[in-house]
Image 1 (cartoon, rainbow, N blue to C red):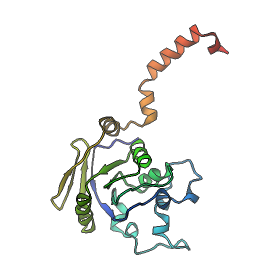
Image 2 (image 1 turned 30 degrees about the horizontal axis):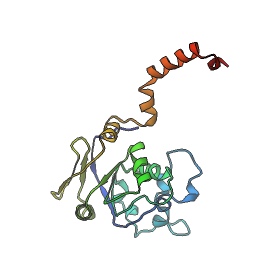
Image 3 (image 1 turned 180 degrees about the vertical axis):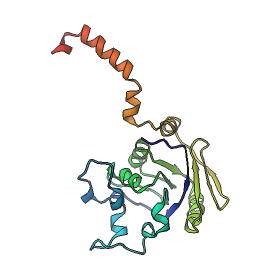
Image 4 (image 1 turned 90 degrees about the vertical axis):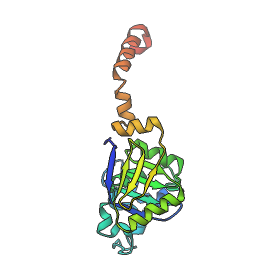
Length: 201
């Protein structure tokens, strides 16, 4: 998992509430178990018409916002079914941070496990950042200092769980956390193989 320390770049404003995981990545794209290649189908029904043609009125189809690394959106982001493809598609598109007043719990947890930082801010703070994003001002997210700042001069602090912060800063997903304990695991397996007769069956 790529480390997350400090990012600065384009933020896409998407002021919609209750964006569910089916809107993020529709069910027809869930057949793959690969994490790559999903970005092109992110927000599929918002980005394309029924014939698969690009909708020019959707912000992620605009040239400037195609390079967005931060998404600023509304309340209850990521609600609906608990599909891990949702954070996969966001990450594959290029998003490393999502800022919203609130998130669905399972989606919130999945973000951390996949290298995305979900940030909860007060509604009026999110609105300020959305306005800056609409005016194409760059935004910086500093995880170490838990601070978001924009070229518009606004600065907002955010809270994050210490353990999750450490994992993002060091780029540790569940597999990497397990491998850090490989020596202990090997010692245990060696001990079991010598003391438990059933372990050799």
